[in-house]
Image (cartoon, rainbow, N blue to C red):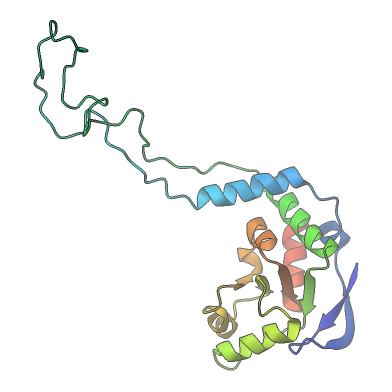
Length: 209
């Protein structure tokens, strides 16, 4: 699969690059994508929710009324869950929502996500670039040149580039990551995927193992 390489101004450089069919042109596995996204979102949950049960609520343990003869249901404690201020029945407890997926399935999910973006023509390859200093204005000009200023975009760098990352940090719609930080959710959550040339080798190497 061949795609044109653009420069930082969104213009064609006259060069093309061949994307690996084993990464960008497979038969997408939607169930693998579903599981990987589900795991990512589950891992974002803190799981610190907690409700007090009857043994943890502050209150007297005295029997509040006699057992029989009141005409109402028997009650042994003011902390009864049926009373206002009582404990919670089967309330949430701290827990981890994470679950395990094997590496091959996660690779398949990422390759499927890349293929979907390529099929939708929402994948762009840019030649490597750097900023001399952090500049949100320069990064905005870069997005405007690609027509992405009002769209959610994911820019994938080959190596850590502090100036490019800092330039994008104030923009909610843009996310800058390196190849090692890529995940299926981030790829699919973006309207457009922008890959720097230097990132392609790392992506194909990681997903071809």
